[in-house]
Image (cartoon, rainbow, N blue to C red; front, side, top):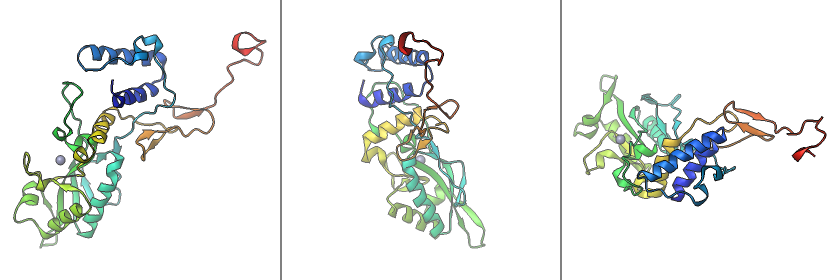
Length: 264
Ligand SMILES: [Zn+2]
């Protein structure tokens, strides 16, 4: 089992409520390895009853909604990895600067990666799978003073409105890639991403996996957007991730216990 996969597994396990749930999950994972996932069982996890319960592991929460409130966005809600939020902020700023509105038509997508072993060429997969891409139409003000949609053929064509051209230039100057420059397999003029799959293939792979495992954090272990992990904020006691309440760690010994076993 590679370290990325083990880390993911550890986080999933740590988010579970019961020892029985952990054993059931690990059994599924180990069975998966026997039917062709190219996993090798962790040495200490060969027998379910010997499984470690990593106390510091945390759940992934990379799947986040970008807040478009008060910004020139319309269209579908934008789901992305928080590391892509600065790129979305740059798109926001470019839209404001050039007087256009961004109509999101797609963002995070599930990869549905076929099971064919652990080796995957990241270039085969879209940055949409890691939450690092967005597809948009652009609304601009036409000569009659009305807002008008510029969709794929408009964004790619020779008659692209100046404001849309300026917007695209601005987004590219902010460091993003524009799909209208893609030639392989073909131009994709509604697409913007930051090229994570090529600039950092390992981070890309990890994020694709984390997006699949992403959970809703609870009130007492909210999502840390810096790490994209749920983090326990209870100062006393421990977080009950189901209720979202910090629970005091109680003395396991009843005051009337006159002293048997560990309470002696
Ligand atoms: Zn796209």
